[in-house]
Length: 213
Image (tube, rainbow, N blue to C red; front, side, top):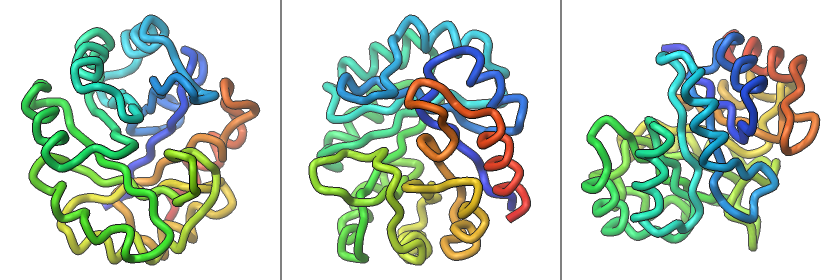
């Protein structure tokens, strides 16, 4: 099965159109107030309204209250929720029950060694996907750093599809896919001109390389 491609940190209509036209399967919208890629609810809705139905919009949240997540999902018509932070399995289950069944949950794990995934099995009832990102102290994700990709292959033992993130670029994504064998890859900084704008050539190259892997 061909690897799925998620372009994260979308902040404007042009970048979303580029990503969709080039073949991305998911677009990520970051609602964390401290993120350099933060997008407003209003802008996210504008972009989602113009996004083809076969490209799924995903909201990125860092320890947001569940009620706020549900409200944003409804307002912006998101199809997925990506959870960074310290959510417990119970909290994920409660959020799962508060969302429309068509909206998937993706729990993010910050990893540097196999032990960082030891509790992942507790989330399999509530989360349809896991995303693995590099563990950097004090950062919830989006650092642009890599981690040992073979850990992603180990993480698949939980039976949940894995998105691979962390320092992916057009130059290394094929090797990352080869080593990790993920369900999907996730990129933000690796295809940017700046945190608010994507670089068309990098975006095109990344998607082409991922599809060739």
